[in-house]
Image (cartoon, helix red, strand yellow):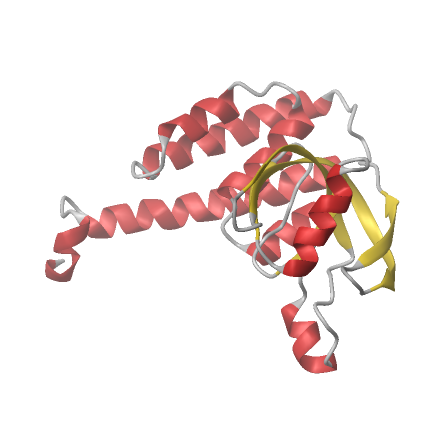
Length: 213
């Protein structure tokens, strides 16, 4: 499945609404088999320049259907849990839905002891983000805080708090875990600086009073 505005990560629980006929058929086949399928971000810019149909970015994630509910109209709501990164090899067929060939990818340095300290650094940046973004749901931060495994924490923070899909795709494609931590840390710190500046400029005004600032 190619989605233009979604970068799917391992460990993530992704809700999906299935309504297109091709994906209804795909889901039916998936549920009768291993319950696995890949979600890739669509490279819209490449598609516009080459005319390719929904070209995928080269790295995506495979997930397993954890829950699925079929509606009376034939559409379905499901939860897909990310399992692992994969690299796109080729499109095997397009009908009745796309089937591609992928190769599994493994993180580099995922067992590095230094990742525990890097998780602590990232957690500090996440706590700062929480202080600066009072409007965001606190349960999201509580959930992230409970995650101890460094790589799981890294991927879920990437999916949840990174708002730039191009940066998300870079993070997904970065197999070196240390480098991935550093990229996300740099992104969050720059974003926190921006939020801090906006907060200073806003002063004590609420959102509905910014036109008077």
